[in-house]
Image 1: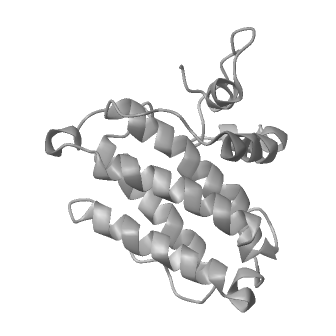
Image 2: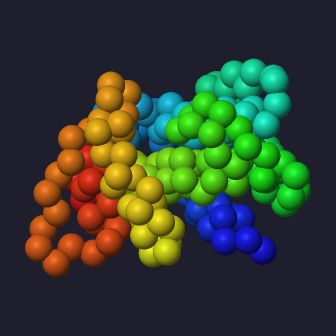
Length: 182
């Protein structure tokens, strides 16, 4: 299995595990993303998955029904990404748009993995679940996000960086970089 496919699966199933751990009364709870509830955050992750997959064709991504079955919507979106990554022609298709021209696999490995990983922590924090993230995925996300620091601080992006404490681990450094107080 190629590295990106394996890393994506680790991250996506980590998000899925937290998603399945949401108690019915937590969907309206706030998240570390100050403008989003748990429902909003999950809808964003599904929408991002759909938007990334839509780069492979001419179709617009289907809008997320925030009041619908978000667990099922994520399962379907995850399966669409996994299917595309398992098809060499689709995974290597050069797509344009988000972050310039690049193979689909690269877009997944950079943007989608990083976005889903950070929001896995957000979801875990908001719903009192395990906040530990995969260390290799954290390192890869840091590698991708650090050089685009200014681009991710735009409105609707990440909050201002928080200086990490001396001796902070990689996960804490990444989360602080993304404006999350740990």
